[in-house]
Picture 1 (cartoon, one colour):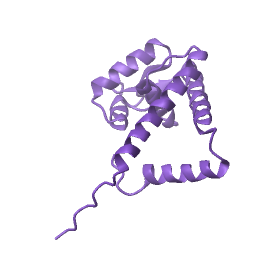
Picture 2 (cartoon, rainbow, N blue to C red):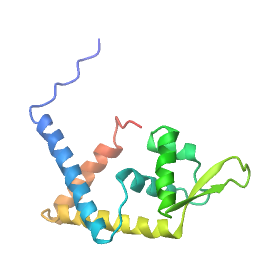
Picture 3 (cartoon, rainbow, N blue to C red):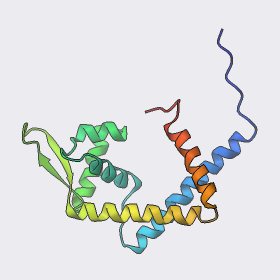
Length: 154
């Protein structure tokens, strides 16, 4: 008979709330830095740009993006439509199968992605400022253990 899973500690609810608050704070700080650059992307659009950039060489298909984002293909179409309207991505036919559409970053999209990354780094720096170098390193290791460790769900 499997042993019962341990009951959550009394502090786990508080820890969950702190994680949510930290995530929100990070998002607000990033949006603040982006506003100064006059760049406005939703978190989902930002993530899609990062994913498209991840595909070096052959641009991803819409189905690839839906899988990576863990959303239905229609949601990807909406995101791509908005990013295409902003000039950040473009649809290109697959040279091997013209019925397949691939999504690639434009020069505008690459500049925007650089600004998004810069805003994220600035936001993180702002939030982590009270921590010492040693605390930052330990915090990074703890986050890596949570993000990359056992029990990770895709």
